[in-house]
Image (cartoon, rainbow, N blue to C red):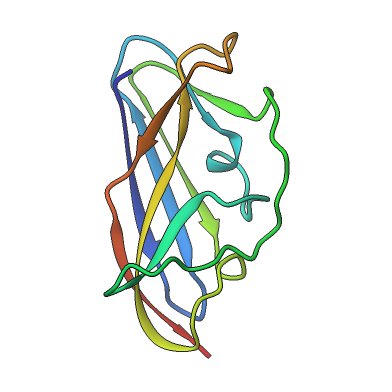
Length: 133
């Protein structure tokens, strides 16, 4: 699987918007969680958010939902996809002005007919500053 992904953060205006970008550089299709393709506010923890410095995890406080086999989106060979997600209300960001580290740590699927055969994939961490009123 030749899959590359990156994150960018826009934490202006009291919001934390995450843009997830995935690129399939391989010759075969891959599947990623549907929440990364279409959900503006996903029902479930997608990202690992930590305080910086120190690395203390920021609690996920958003909705949880069970995902099924149909909850994957296809990324064709030699294609890319980007999607922006609002995580402002989904994590217990500390009041005041703080710096955080964020990464996606999830699964990709090489064959939709074998959902049990997932492959872990993780993005590089991204640092961002967020001011919570």
